[in-house]
Each structure stands twice: as structure tokens, then as C-alpha cells.
Image (cartoon, rainbow, N blue to C red; front, side, top):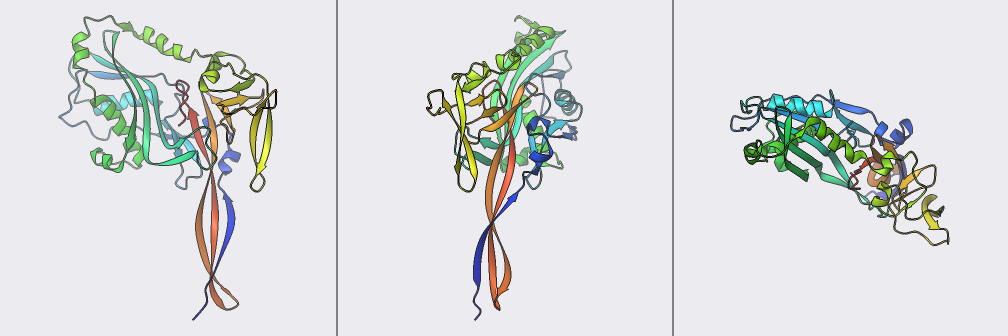
Length: 356
């Protein structure tokens, strides 16, 4: 009977090359462009009380709707649509619902305030290794406003602020066959966010209620970008104890110093102290005059992109593998505990401070 030996070795494998090859700002990741086409039409049972749909993108970041991991999960691209987000969604709606529209002259105007897809959740100020959760279910974060319009005048009628979660059962309701599941989920959310709503009451009130011009709606939407951290020419030096302080560019602690402590095998962690040497804890982020950082643990470097902020989180996972061989003539199995390192991109919601 042969004796089998089992050896375990720890071997690190770094899959973070993407962060070295591109900018450390996730906003600068390359775009993966999808062509959002209606490959089938809405079923005959769907009837809509308006004749067309118009879309305005008033999000803080209008360039993408999320981050797409590679098949190996070690690199990412931003998700975009051919022709732009708003124009593509508008075209898709008017193609897909061509046979479902009413013959009148009412237009549905949709204003996107939030529309972002994420497969990860990040909890601020949690220990490294415990702050990142890869989702079995994908999520779409949505905040949409709806207007009904006629002859250039629009009445606000609905507002949706929700998170749509995809589980495997939902796929049976998606009637189209696409190359990737993400495209199917995007189209499901687009249909859901129109067909779930009852617009009949708004149609009846259209001639009785005060309305807004398109220019007034654009001006109202633009006002959401008038926040100090986006408008001020310089970011204030100091510690932002919460997102509200960061948003208003008014740090709660103006004088601080940054230190580092070592742990494990050569790993370092930053921590900050006030002018009296007392450790500051908790806090949302801080700016030292050169780099803005977010979070107590990891202190990830954060960067502006458009009217939002982005950062990478280092995520380390482990898995076991083995190989067979011989030791002094005996069959043996060599086990390896492998380390996989990924840099996961995140965006800060500049309205709420949520991270996704």
C-alpha cells in the first residue's frame, strides 16, 4: 500500500494588473458598448396611454450604467450603450412599444436620476476581507421621475426610488434571447419601470394641473449638481466625519496627521489622529491636500469622474488546488492554498452617499 503525502503551500497570485495598466480612477476604465435594440415587440396585451417616450439623463455620471467584470473577474470595463445612455433607452422604448402606444398626442417623459447596475456590495468602515460581498443576485439601483406632456408642456406624475434584484426565476419572464444575461436584465428593468405604473390618473389631470416647459425641467434637474464638493475650485483639507460633510466640502476636523501601522507580513494600514494625538474614529474620508481617501479600513484613494467620485477596493480571496507527484518513490499530493487579488471598482452616489 502506498503512502500519500499532502503538502500545503501558500502562493499569492496577483490579478490586479488592470490597476497598473490603467488609471487608478475607475472612471477611466474602457467602455464596453452594447447596442440596445428591441429584437421583439411588446406583446399585444400591453397598452400604453401615450404615443411616445422621451428620456433625459440627469444622473451624476451619464457615461455608464455600471461595471462589467471579465469572465475571470480580474478586470473590469464600464457598461455603456451605443449612441449614449438616454438616446439608446429612448430609441429602445419607442421601438419595443411601437404597437402598444396610444394614437393621441401625449408623451411620457422619463428623467433618470439613478440607474446603476452592480454585482457587489461594499460596507464602509468594515475590516478588510469583510467589507465586500459578491452578489448571487444582481441589483439595479433606480430613481426615475415621470412626466406626461402635450404640446411642449409637462406634468410631473410619478417618482420611483427602488432597487430591483434579479434572481434566477425572473429570467423566465424575459422573452428575448441575448448574448449576455446582463443585457436581458437591463431590458427587463426598462420594461418593468414603465409597465408597473398606472398613468391613467395623470392623463385625466393633464389639462387641469400646472405644467412645466422642457427648459424648466432641465433647469430643475441641473440644480442637483449645485453642491459644494462639485462646485468649489478646491477640496478642503481635513477629515470628513460623514458623507454630508464631504458633500458640503466642510470637514469636521481640520487638523490631523496620517500614520501607518504594520500587520501580518508586511501589510500596512493607515490611521489618522487629531492635533492632540487622539485617533479619529469613525470617519467617512479625508483629504491631505494631495489625495482624497475614503473609509477607515483600506483608506482607498478616491477620484472624481464627471460629477461623481470613484475608487477601487482590493479584494483578496483564497482557494485550494493540488497536484500529484512522487516523494522518494511514494505517490504524493501537493496542495496549494492560492491567493487571488482583485481590484473592484465602485461609485459614490453623490445624492445619498451610497456605494455601489
